[in-house]
Image (cartoon, rainbow, N blue to C red; front, top):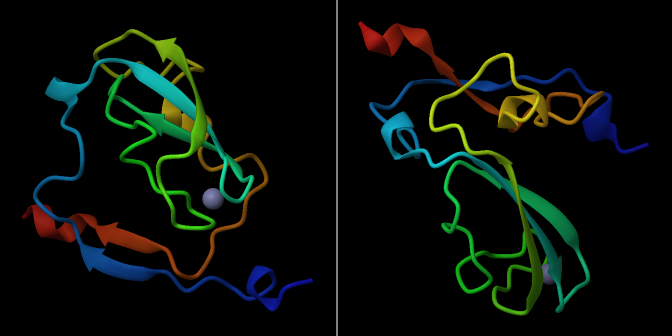
Length: 115
Ligand SMILES: [Zn+2]
């Protein structure tokens, strides 16, 4: 077993930036994009609140680093423009994957910076 998976994670704690990613007012729903990289064969799912933000020509393969040659699928999980904490279709229901362990390259933002 890789030793990374048995060490106790020591996440980096940083102050939270003013804005992270897509604001709730920009949200179009919940979408999952499935990509199959035609360069290296990796299959990966990418979740987003934007319908068309992630396309074959602007998404880099996390394995080989290339973009462009994909088979690209998309499913609309929700058309709700506001987060529904009771919905099973929200992204936080899918990430982390059930049974995942926190890895020590994680960055966890402190809530102290809102003051
Ligand atoms: Zn690839």
